[in-house]
Length: 105
Ligand code: FES
Image (cartoon, rainbow, N blue to C red):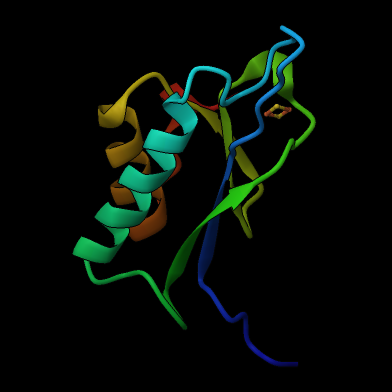
């Protein structure tokens, strides 16, 4: 069996809705946090083949709990409120493999 292309994969829901219904990126925070996570992973030299990848995603189906992000292969779901949360998620889970319980949903 081929080994996994990435050690870990972080997806941010960046869905917006114009009809007033809740969506993770309605206020633009998710987009901003996605860019921050990607930039930080790159700065730590861990973004790329054989390492980790941060990706945008459409609706992940947990809108009422948003904004949401998920890390595979562990399948651990998170929410966040600011850049500090996202930096911790990148450093603790993506880099060190330690799940961030306080941000888990
Ligand atoms: S809008 Fe983000 S999970 Fe549905």
